Length: 307
Image (cartoon, rainbow, N blue to C red; front, side):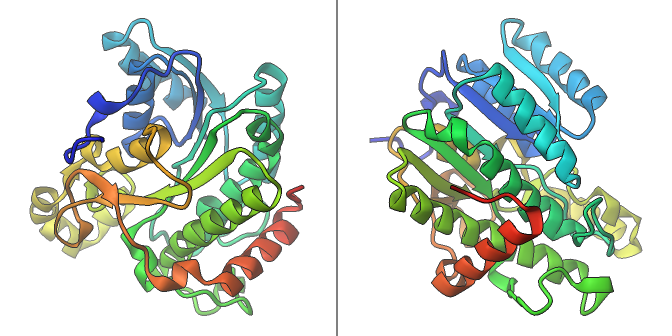
């Protein structure tokens, strides 16, 4: 049995394993890359800026000089970039034990991706949906592989509206509504992906995780708001460090006892902070009809068909 206070000390030897971490150059992704590299994995640090990725890699190599980390460009707001990443990865790698869909943006003003998607749904869900589908061949070919999607407590207030999924032209948009919808989508996708694996007898599992209330740069753009600056000392006091916030997604990725469909989050009060355990999502995250509609819409929007 794993201990109650699960830490990176419980990560098994990952020598010979290949792991992709999207958004691996900062925050939760950076901490995840460090943990996997520490245990011997080949880690693909997938990030929008190769320059920032190489700088992050240098930081890790200072104290882990033998770490095997490869930086690859991946812009989730551009499906062409997603396709290029998948093509280049498959050209050089024949297996993938863990795909950690970690990258994300939070509560940004209305904007659209290069493909015209509302930016939070486009980055947090559609980009990762496309990436997972484009890597499906190598995931299938790797026994006991895993796909881990990083959601948030914000999924609890998320609402799906399939008549206006992407807040077309800003209609009905609010930064919190769009973020919550994208995080609910992460969970709906996770459970539908597991059903896809089971239906097609694929030896892979889909899991999800959330970091609780963690101190990362995800909300840096909000610092411009006067009330956020005023509350910043209190926020920092309440938040746990990224190294702890990353533990749920790390555990979902590598704990040998983790099971399909499990959702990991902190064990503290209101799941704000603490050590990673299996937690329950809101019932709407398991809604079969919403999951199916989202899957169909995502295939249509991205032109990535799972088969």
